[in-house]
Length: 115
Length: 112
Image 1: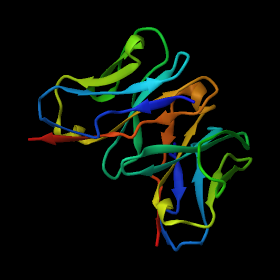
Image 2 (image 1 turned 120 degrees about the vertical axis):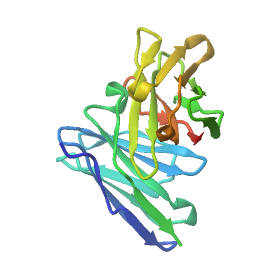
Image 3 (image 1 turned 180 degrees about the vertical axis):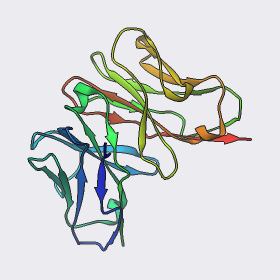
Image 4 (image 1 turned 30 degrees about the horizontal axis):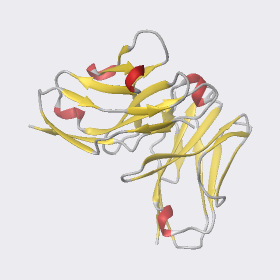
């Protein structure tokens, strides 16, 4: 059974640009959650999508957005990149809403560097 | 929303010694509690989880954790640490129909 797949694994952007990250969940999983990981901050919750609807949202500015497709694949977008957006972006999938199943399966992440 | 505090940023223990990693949560109702481990170059893996019932839960790799409602804590323990346990450990709290929130992590170094 394939795990959670995130693409691209590494990318470098400059300030002001935008970026789109992709996440393919485990087959059959309907929920996708996104987290930003930075040293000392741990995993900061961005948002969770379930059945193509954003169900929960963390405390991030509107520059961070996402969506989920009918096949449960998800994308997140960051516009007008800032230096502080440099981080590892993790995607996690679960069968149902994360708070219902309580178990997330994580991808290896997309490491974004903003210059 | 629920939140998690991991007071220790970095802990060093000798191989074979016992380990306890601290976790405190904040949530008004009964939380779901988890410990995840992130080994170098690998994704996060679930170690154990607590939903209800017995407050002492067993996980993989010989880890256990105890839920103490009076202290709002869910500390992770292992009686004898192995060099392969060196990693970053994250405590997380979830709730029914809610998302999961993670702590800042505790990095474990194991001395030979």
